[in-house]
Amino acid sequence: MPLASLPKAELHLHIEGTLEPELAFELAARNGVDLPYADTEELRKAYLFEDLQSFLDLYYGLMAVLRTEDDFEQLADAYLARAAAQGVRHAEIFFDPQAHTARGVPIGTVVQGLDAALSKSVERHGVSTRLIMCFLRDQSAESAMQTLESAKPYLDRIVGVGLDSAEVGNPASKFREVYEAAGALGLRKVAHAGEEGDPSYIWEALDLLGVERVDHGLRCMEDPALVERLVRDRVPLTLCPLSNVRLRAVDVLEEHPLPRMMDAGLLCTVNSDDPAYFGGYAGDNFHAVREALAIEPERLRQLARNSFLASFLDDDEELRSR
Ligand code: ADE
Ligand code: ZN
Image (cartoon, rainbow, N blue to C red; front, side, top):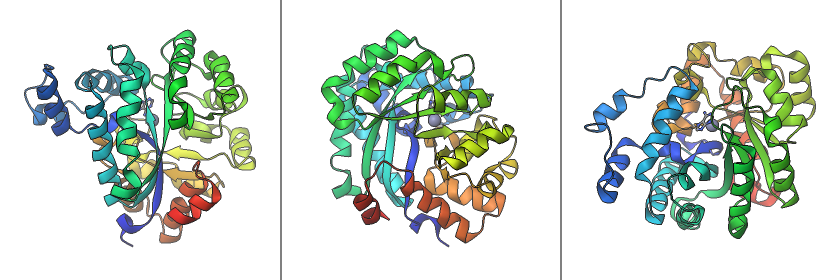
């Protein structure tokens, strides 16, 4: 089956993680930003990560090149073109406002720039989109609350909130109030949990934040009661297989728990996370799991169906995009 033609939704994608080295250098030149790498080749050579934190250090550093609305528009448009070529029909896109406001780039620049690309995406690429604003969990709860406040003028363009960045030591409990406030504003809720953190991080995301989807959720397999809960409530998991290998959450793709997770009845989806850094976009992730884990065609189709079921599309939109 040509996996690029299998229609799919992408539900775990950080727009900043789609910054390809070529675009990073183009934006650096345009904005007069000095990069600590001689060229794209040297930058790519730095993509050897030990763990999540070693990736995050480089990822936040490279964001220095993103400064104007045009930069964010160009970044998002390039992602949408690539995603469309790999069969993505719908994308729910994360962005990290605090990683930009901390550098003096206002949240309005980020949202308006992204929206300039997203608002043309159906027409230009055949990809419907949603935006999810993530709080950085290694920043304070107060900073998250201020970020939510500063996003109020743009909430017509933001469907939900998420939680990302360094997981271990930054449990969901820290963000209980801000998720309550986001819910009161009508925002949907997701959170990264169980990528590096143990199952307690997933329990907290469910019980304290009330998330509707868990991003990664890989380590749920260590806790049978948690698996039972996730299966019972049909909580979707947005798995990112190539990311898990590059960030060493699993040793090799052949040992990825995806087949066992599907056997257990979990509602799994396959996504790319930060494709410019981890070796592939959505279709590449489908291809990689098919090859490494011998996932049968019917299961690949199930994963694609799951991605639409787990999306924030309403039923009509969902049927149209499949
Ligand atoms: N930010 C970007 N990618 C991430 C990941 N895989 N985990 C946590 N935070 C992230
Ligand atoms: Zn992620």
